[in-house]
Length: 76
Image (tube, rainbow, N blue to C red; front, top):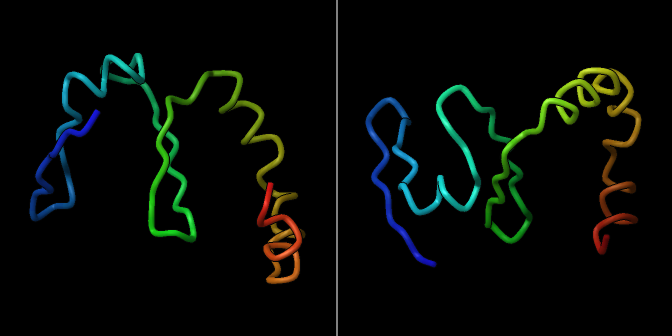
């Protein structure tokens, strides 16, 4: 499915209805964005459990943020 949306001068966009349906999102839901090295971006709906987990481990993730770690785990 290919859908195009325009970005406003404030960096905002409307998520097309077809994409909202695929993501099963509604107003107030949270989205997680992941920028890939290829220049592509993945987006997914954040589950409440995901958010709680991310907040719990947020402070510990920087220890794996080095270039060596990126190279070692690039194929996962």
